[in-house]
Amino acid sequence: MSRVPAVEVLLATYNGARFLREQLDSVFAQDYENVRVLARDDGSSDQTNEILAQYARRFPERMRIMPTGFMTGSAKKNFGFLMQASTADYICFCDQDDVWLPDKLSAAKHAMDQLESRWSTNTPLLVFSDLRVVDDQLQTLHPSFWSHMGIDPGQVGRLATVLVQSVVTGCTAMVNRKLIELACHMPEEAFMHDRWIALLIACFGRAGFVRSPTVLYRQHGENVLGTGRKVAANSAENPARPLLERILKPHVSTGLLAYWEMSQREAKALLAVHGPELPPQKANILLAFLRCQTSKSGWLRVVTFLRYRFFYPDMRTNLAIAAYLWRRNVLNASQG
Image (tube, rainbow, N blue to C red; front, side, top):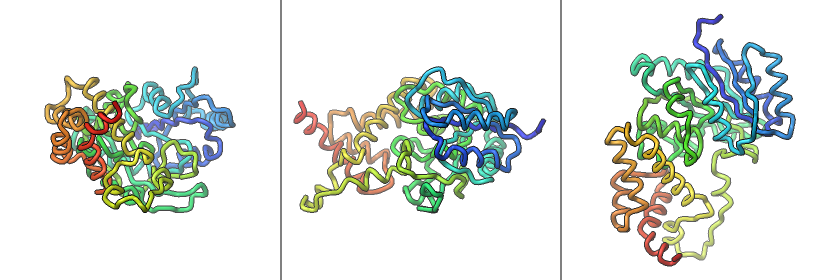
């Protein structure tokens, strides 16, 4: 038996037969020697279950499949069941349609060792990395997902940033047992497992990151989330509208307001679930974030947004949110 600590890869699948073999091959080809896979399918109607069974027979000591039982209907809930069933000290999340570079796990474990030497295994710990964005044939579209999306990985410990930006991409993440124990019971309001884990880290833990891409992040038109650029690209603007209005008015069609309101629900849930043990400074940030939405004063909403810097990566989005917060009283009155 290997003396190298086991890393358990949680694989959530649903109708993923098209790319699943490539992903599994890349997991089992890792240069980290003690890798095991825990898979759960969410009711696929294609060949996904047959492929999982083939690999379980091929790697009987390294792969097990959870019984489906019932469909959850979401990747978040599927990963939630996997987290609850996981047993290893180190956990990684695996999407069904990507490809891992050979040193993904060894690079993450090296960074995790550095965190543990500084903060100990009793601290919730997270390591994540950049990704290379590729098409369905694995041809590079963008060499750096972080650069493409305007993500600063150094912001992962800043709660005000993590509330509004998805800094951590789950398929790159490695977490320790302490973080899994904290995260495995996600509330319904959590948007995705990786966002919830990032929020927990910003409140209670420590994180490190690998700057080089470790995952080929495949974009193929059926991604659950993907880069998020497609929706914005399809929302053409009317050039006849005044420039200032086009800059400041939030466009619901881009998902901006939906994303903001989702973030508000997550913040409220985080206070409800972990309020008593939150450090006072973190609790104050969450309360300030909620005031941006709930205060009766438009001036106070905008000032709070600016003071705590609940900022998105680009100025236009921040202006749009500020305008929305200022106009909320008018919007609510017109809707009533």
